[in-house]
Length: 131
Image (cartoon, rainbow, N blue to C red; front, side, top):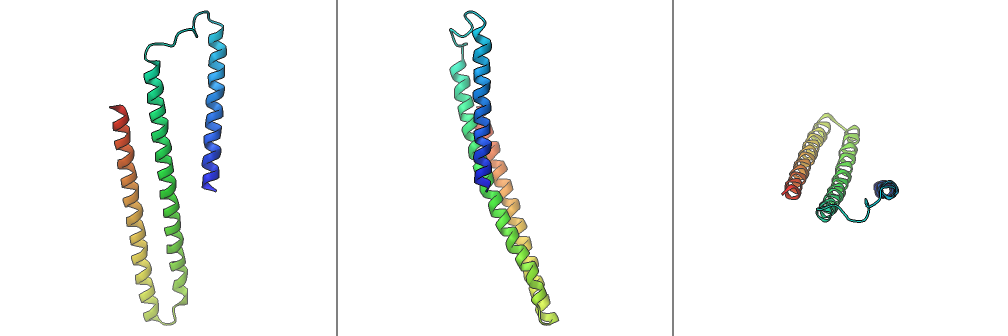
């Protein structure tokens, strides 16, 4: 489902960009000599825009993977929490509760680590593009 949403978002963005280009061509077509020569540095701007679009797309794909992993881990923790009710005696309940707490902490630790690494990667990519 996330793939379909992401694909629909990309298609909507592409169609909006195409509409803006056509609108710009229409507006500049009314001005004589406006569309005959591209402004200086247009190639550099387009190259930067391409790099930027690629970087943002890559970051969004990574973020999608991280969110799917976090969702899966959350489901496992929830299943472990629901398993607490199956305890037969207080000692079993205590053991299950300790295991649940350990799994919850590990899940939070992994999630935080993944978010920090994603932020560092995004910051490094932004610095790379700015340079």
